[in-house]
Image (tube, rainbow, N blue to C red; front, side, top):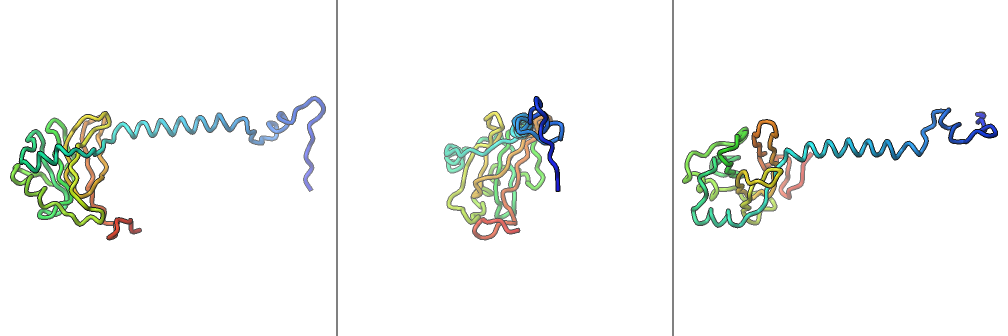
Length: 178
């Protein structure tokens, strides 16, 4: 049997709880605020280094009319004859070409885009998109039947990294296999 001391006359229940090291509910808002501030600081630090893909029908028109800009260095990912994606990166940026292969001529760029794999389960049409940095500045172009892939820009070195859109863990329906 446990005996609980009742507060003595003139002593508040709050003071007794604090003396017994019982976590008081008035401390929770302060702790929650600190946790939220740390969380938002981490998110803000990460968000600054990611870019995004934004669909742009003008790029598709440029591809179809053979007027893609040669201000880009082009790369493809996937198989040589059936790539998953083709990207053009502004030549002023350094590109981490790990898992990507450089395309040497504009003729080859058009050939790679025309041979893009449409085997993705949700593929209905090819996507042409701008690759934007975290400030919305255009740093390249994207062609693929995959509609999304992470884009990361190292804020210290300026190196652009675009991940291969193919995920071998997806099944035929685009669901992840684990």
